[in-house]
Structure formats: C-alpha cells, structure tokens
Length: 135
Image (cartoon, rainbow, N blue to C red; front, side, top):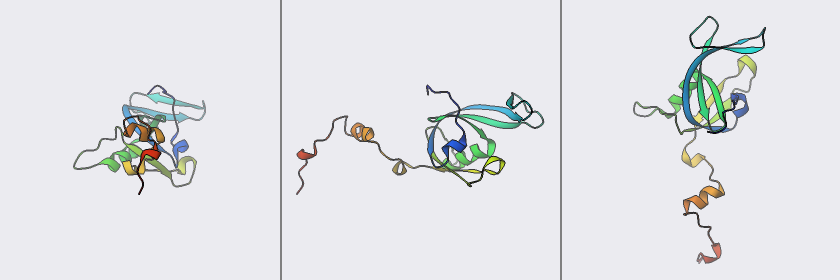
C-alpha cells in the first residue's frame, strides 16, 4: 500500500475495508495535558495495547477486542486469517468513549463488482451486446 496515512474507525462506519496486513503492536495512551498520543514499546500504567492494521483505506490502530472481533469473523476449522479479508464497519451510534464498533466479514457475493472488474472477468475485452443473440 502506497498511502501510509492513518484512518479512524469512526470514519469507516457504514463503509468497508480490506485488511492487507497486521504490523504488530505498541502501547499507547492519550495525554490530555499535552494534547498528544504517547507511545511505548512496553506496557506502562494507563497505556493500552494497540495493533497497527494496514488496510486499503489507511493504517488503523485497533485494540485487542477489535482485532479479536475480526479474527472471530473469519475463524473456521481452527484457523483465523484476516489478511485479504473485507469487513463492513457498524457502530452503536454513540460517540467518544461510549462508541463500540462491530465488524462483519463481507463474502464475495456482498462485494459489488465494478465495471472494471467485469471487464477483467472476461479477459479485458469489452462486450458488444448487439452480438449476443437474444431470442
């Protein structure tokens, strides 16, 4: 992915994203006095573990519960791999500390095909519908 910008989950509500990879985790906390995010490689009081998830929409910081929800959505026969999977984001409609996010895995039939995808699926040749015999 060329674009390494961050995206907030709140910006993805009622939208979808594809997980490209998970880059690991760090510990983070918001410092309200300095109005900035503090980051640590090891746990400290007040910090929480955040996973860096690379998506087609940008980089997401996800908590352990959010990552667990993604993994549970694709879990099958003892294996859970979120790489390459597409998820739809919903929320409880609240904001701030009260917001909760829900993730639903999108199956291929749920993913709309663009016109370009249709051309790709027929060997990159546009179809002349006047050549199709309709009886």
